[in-house]
Length: 68
Image (tube, rainbow, N blue to C red; front, side, top):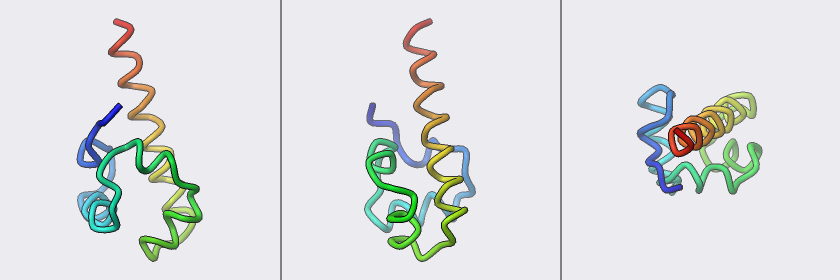
């Protein structure tokens, strides 16, 4: 799955920050631990957890579309 970070259900500023930090795909987010995302973006760990949950949801939604 190579879905773009811009496809995530997150605020535009967060998506832009993810891309600036080198997270260009949803897979690149899912490969990191939330604490690592928090450190790289300079954000609170709970925000990194929200990002991770949005990435997982996007993956689940994509999987569902593939099944249908």
